[in-house]
Length: 430
Image (cartoon, rainbow, N blue to C red):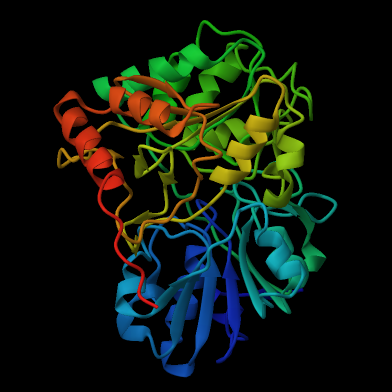
């Protein structure tokens, strides 16, 4: 382990024609990535790999394409432009499988840039608010470079690493990327009420970040003995944990502990998880393992979508052929919840876009990606109600989904769907 005087010194070993993994989400080591980008005149053909990251991504500037290429495993806003600009790619992968890409050397790594808490008296640091595939990256990269930050919360679980596992460290003192809770609209609150109506006492929850998960959580104050097993969570769960609504007593795995693989939220969240043994951070190949998820009775998976067609196909990663986000862990939890005893798989979305276009559609846009197949879809929720698709025929599904579309679109959606179904088949050229 070498102690460096600056981020610039720490990243000097990064060389051309190498592959670099960057820790994800709120733990993105921004000082290291900036220092690496500042060496642009010395570098060529460096591949930067990561999931969604918070903050700036200076290496994603298309003008620097001769030096850096972005390979996203989940596309964040800060790198979304790279796919159209040509200096970025997307690798579709379930979050549960990402660590295996490194361990099996399908994607071998030269460097891992990480962000950790200071070592304790025994020399152990914490990966803090983001474990995901970073532990696998550390174990399989040739060189590990860390920014050590006293503002990084110390969390328990898989993210505890000894300082000897780090090759180069630099001490920094910067805030962790924050994410304020969004104001819940009337539409989102109604969706949250529908979601809450499906959740029984003693259920275990998985949800993401944003207004709809927050709306659902705010409607659970009357519930009892809920559990938490989710790839990520934010501030919305804190009050429910503190008032005992979420106590994890009836989980099938890790009773008395809330599981996650990364966190994004406000300083309140980071203060809450710091040195808190109730929160356990595990690798994504464990948290998102369907076989582990299904062991929780009454597992409820709450996920979102870009659009849903009348057969139940869920597009959650693209707008037509244009990639927008990624596969992430949606299918991991949709399937895990469906296989759980008494489990429920929920897709929740507003009935329309901000432009007023329907998100319940007769057919997905050309080029749209199917993240959750029609065979996996169970509950679809909008502000207009709940469509239970499980065991339903295509005609029954279409009727149920039209019923939760915005009233101004219902007639046209149904008409277009049946017109397409009844259109004469085009001859096949041979």
